[in-house]
Length: 201
Picture 1 (tube, helix red, strand yellow):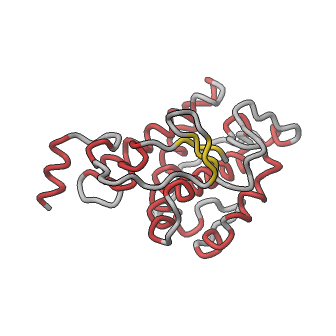
Picture 2 (cartoon, rainbow, N blue to C red):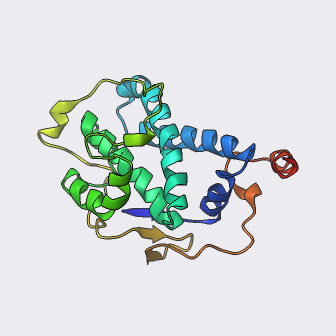
């Protein structure tokens, strides 16, 4: 899959494992991902999918942290969560929201098989052990789209590795090295007061 990676991603990685700012960054990222993917859906379908996506993306934040703790680089940890989302979109027949074509689902699963098996994640059960105890809100499926799937927002041909596009437009296979002195204040949703409060804890 091809994803972006810049200073905000590194700052978010740092923030998500901190008190106070972690929850703020978590909530900001959930809102962002819900908005981005709803914008890819038909307008008539957006409202009915919002609660499901909010719950789903909130759960994938736990996946991201678990992948980092398991030693995956930032780009791969984040890609794992995007793969989970695409499994979910496929299961619902939301092919217009997918980031890669449905015929690459198995390829993406195989790349992270060890992590997925450890946490009970499958294509049919994208959250596995990360499914919240309170569940995930239901949303109507459009299974008829699976008969002849259209993927207007998908980019195929990137299933063999994680491809990272930098701010300069360069594509780096495997991602970039983490920069030194990452400032958590650059994380989305974080204000200076939040950082001061987190440092005090």
